Image (cartoon, rainbow over all chains, first blue to last red; front, side):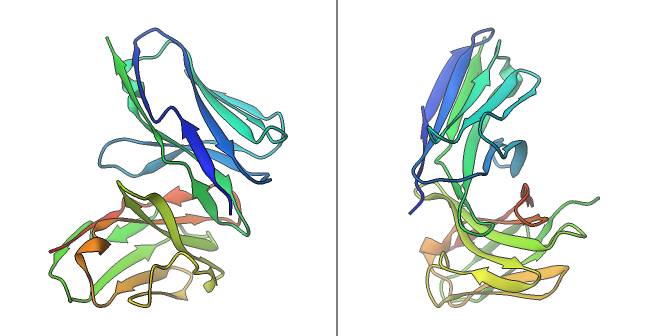
Length: 110
Length: 112
């Protein structure tokens, strides 16, 4: 069974600081996704990583994938309040299914 | 594009009643997914369809749950009879094959 673990699950950080969220998964997969969810809202797709070594950046967020280590990271640079949300990683399972991590609740404070 | 459309957005019902959730995927997408989100269990895949055919329903919790996709532009998730433990946010998502899934706004279900 494919297990997806995120850490930390809760993160409070100051504006301007950098931090990394980690996503480990238990079995081989060639698809990894990062989503953002604001309270009471739906999930918004942030990044799609489809190959080992893939790195994608959008604004203050950068995601990378190491399929050999079964690890993806979401790096936050110079955090701002607008980044406060819950971030999920999801790993491709058999067929088109995705297994989601439990999410990392990020709070950026002044 | 209107995105994935779900209805109703909120549903409050009493235990034992039948509940039907509806989803219209993004036009041109050939895969459709139903997820359930709760605080305790997080996001769980219930079932997904490819080209209107159910591919994996292993996440459907029990026989009280059923899903259909009669055509490429419509799917339903039915719970009969509903129970308080079914209270959750139900998301529908669609995609083109295995590429990224786009989520609808969700239906918040409360079973009293």
